[in-house]
Image: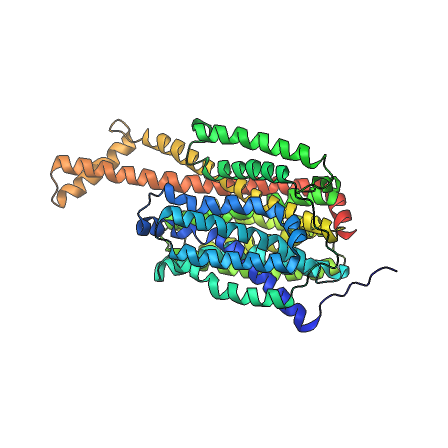
Length: 516
């Protein structure tokens, strides 16, 4: 006689949902909250701007390693124990990060924080999926999707407000009360799996995973700042990454108890879903990276202004996912929602290519709303697709793979757009400088006019000429910076069109798999 599955209801399920959302937000907010505070941290602990980047890199590496291991560790220790332990580890590490007064200490605790945080994302999704009956899986996905959408946007917002008004330590201390509450509710309300078989630990597979994926994440995080393959360490770690990942794939496909069940990728819904999740997070993180830098460096916005500007779009994303869930429940083809999402992303990107130093807060409001609409429409179908048809241990493995794809998608997007901005800014600056010369009529006239103005304000001829050239050089730097960011949004628009076309050509497969 088949076992009847009892799903939590009423107050218990409400608490479980709140706990999972809180855990997801803790993890995702901490992925981006530190970015806006790096300069303050560097000044406080006496680190260089280059070295302090390890605060972000350490978290990202441990995060991406632990995510695919979460399913195995859940089977090993039990869902409730491992979930509660992960929240505890994350919360305690947050406290220790805030107490750190040396770079090495902060980096170590950020790495440990990432080990706890990586599990929160996968386990929150698994717990939500298994807290609702199959016919309500879209509802569970939309709830989880809210955390995925809100987290990266709220990170810069909270980071900016805290950095502008308090000390940087509070970007870590803010996690503590939420974490303590989540620890209590997790231990009381989250249930262990109905059946649990302790797996044989594939130590060699874990080693290949840690080395291959960890090295790959490091290359993505640090490649741009080190001029990619011009740096010997990047070359060595790229080779190690390739060897580690290939070894992982070979081993996991040829043993009975793999640490990461790659054979699940034979399922087309998971494979296509992982691709969509990868693209989705790449686009999401590109926009979250490019927008704050654009407005702070070129429009003079504060970190708080930048964060507040992202809030309306994040709210629209959450509302969009609720609407999306209801439309899918009524039988609306999810492919139309995904294509509408990429179309909205194109509008957001295209509108940003038309911005300038004269852009106002309200002038950017409309494009950011379209960004929120795009996330709200394409995120739910992409998340739902990866879990459709899976249950039990396979569900945990599928969730781990899709979350790793999202993490790597974000890292790849940031690496590519960071490189593009750096290269475009350098080449544009060279082009603009070539036109600043006494032999160029327009430049000579501009320099002459500034010389005259400066001399009428008391400078001698030589000082006026030097100052005029410095002013022009600053204008060149500003223009090259603006053009590089506008180019990044232009690339996002092109990627959105390509993604739209890919979904259009595979719409039957996507619709079939999500509705199956």
